[in-house]
Length: 383
Ligand SMILES: Cc1cc2nc3c(=O)[nH]c(=O)nc-3n(C[C@H](O)[C@H](O)[C@H](O)COP(=O)(O)OP(=O)(O)OC[C@H]3O[C@@H](n4cnc5c(N)ncnc54)[C@H](O)[C@@H]3O)c2cc1C
Image 1 (cartoon, rainbow, N blue to C red):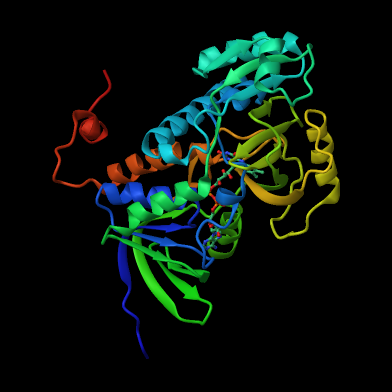
Image 2: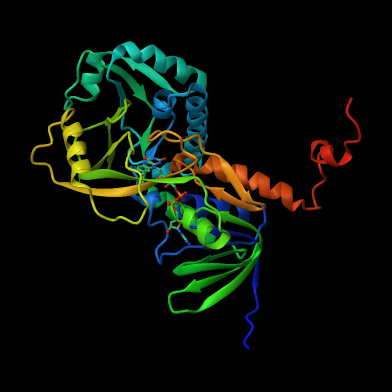
């Protein structure tokens, strides 16, 4: 029998979206040998490139999530990712001078918003109806709305992913296996990555990270016989030719986001209420009609060329139906981590959290431990 020799890595990451790519790069920076496995031939074919491309700074999540602690935590995680992406990859911002106007339908709710934003450190500037009209001359605005300037930006997610991929390419400790149609775990620390032509590679690792978006649920069910509380939603978006000069972010439930990507505009909705299995690929005409009708409340879109598409939203442990979760790191099996950021903007937060966790567990001997690292080892008695 031909026994294939296993390749050894410190960490195997499954899924090459923003989380998988960014995490691979960050783990390389601490000297890990890291394999990234992707089922598609092309990297990041899922939500990481099919989303609206808004670099969030918490203005929406800080206001819209019902539970105030959760709202503040999500806003802070977005802030963390926003600062990191802007400082490390400033070239991904579509237009530096583009302004974003956040709108609340009922201006009597503005104090709820500003109190929460102040607590979470979300940048905002209250502006008048007349000021908003000057920034958005094409938009249908009402004097009953509350208006704010916000720092949310549209980014070129494809460029961001390309920049990260290029940083990875320089490292001899990195490998990317794409076109892996199946993964079979042999035991907790080894798996076979099977390609479409039946060829396979056996890999061993101390840690496994599932950055596989909607694919994560199926891997755990099939390979580990575990049902994780992962919910998948289907959300529709529209691409149009550029609709207006500046970005519009309507913060109330079921309203639209209108963000520009050079000469194109992406319209999305602040609600993902169609739970699904993740297998459906059809466009839902009702969802598209709703998007069109909501968009036309703000802009005249008659005659605009419009192309609808959809994308899956994945949440681990979501109770409600459509508000983004406060993303957490999960470890259903020791040293097997599930990293599913509800927002691309949160990927830096979850990746940095994971880097610290993996570094601590690897316990390398070259740098001395801090007293707090030895706290539990040396703990003899309670005071
Ligand atoms: C409509 C919509 C709009 C959004 N807009 C924004 C936005 O404007 N800003 C923002 O910050 N966030 C936004 N998000 C959220 C954002 O898209 C996601 O949180 C983020 O892209 C998740 O990235 P990821 O790398 O974790 O997962 P993904 O992008 O889903 O990547 C997972 C990867 O794993 C691969 N994979 C799956 N199964 C397997 C397997 N078995 N083996 C190997 N590989 C596998 C997939 O092919 C894929 O490449 C939006 C989401 C939706 C639904």
